[in-house]
Length: 411
Image (cartoon, rainbow, N blue to C red; front, side, top):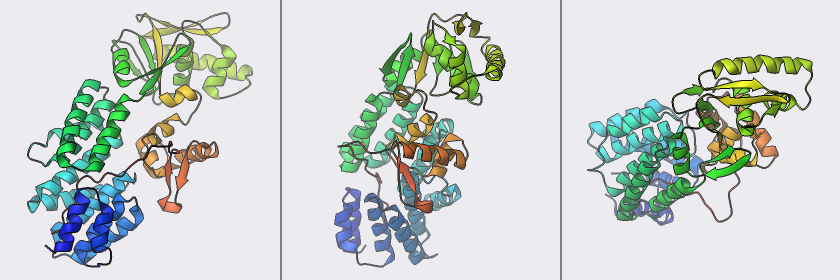
């Protein structure tokens, strides 16, 4: 291998993109273009990075299928980090197959990790777990092992398995230390902070309390009737009722749960369910219809009874009623765009199409939500047109670093 190419690859491996660029910034040969693309990605210049990687793939040509596959994997990771979730999966699958067929097991493993990370990001956790269980991280270098453990921790946090997530992060920290890559260690530390951060807020008996992941896990294992505004379900220890596709019913049961053991006035329920400031008889009639539907849906776990002032929630078996809401809802329980804010809270930049895919909503609905949040300063955009990305305003003193933990070696 060319000494300058080898030196640039080593610099990228330890997270020094500027050191790599000093050696190859002016070169136009295929290996140099590929390494320059990875360096630019590590510096956050995604658009330029994609241009360089595509130029490298063209320069390698059909005679170098392995190098072209490595470029495709690098471009797939850039798409993942920049939240371009519509990047073609088939291209990554073909690159992974090519790498495996030619004995490049490390980069084939990296391609598989990208597939898993995408599945985790869009909420397909069962598929992610099956894919993760199919691989053995033992023969992999420390950087890849750290990535494997980070994915286990991410799934554990989403599955509310706090003990398993902490164990995976401890293993990831040891692997990152062995790898000696500062960016990888920073990624593990960021994941540990996320695990220790508030995971939800508990609203019970008129009080609001912030919960960590372990406390959420304990609450879900209790005998309480839980109105889960994170997953839009109502559950007790025996029954789980999904209201994902019934937003009006969920708004009603959430309002009743927040007021338990008290009741909620009729006009307050109309305002909460239908987002109206004033109610007339037609709205009150519609409220009665929706409450009848809610009684039918909740009949296994609770009843909704009329009171002189309004309505109250009465659980059948549970001794308590609690509402579990996102932390952002502790600041604004009425914010109808909380799901968008929750995704943007990871600190990464998202395209509107990626948000729509992750939320299962239409692109136009997500764009309206982003416009409304932007008008109030809760989110901000970068770039224009198809390169436009959305982020939450960064907190002072905190940065989000791009992690490409395993720069692809270019032969």
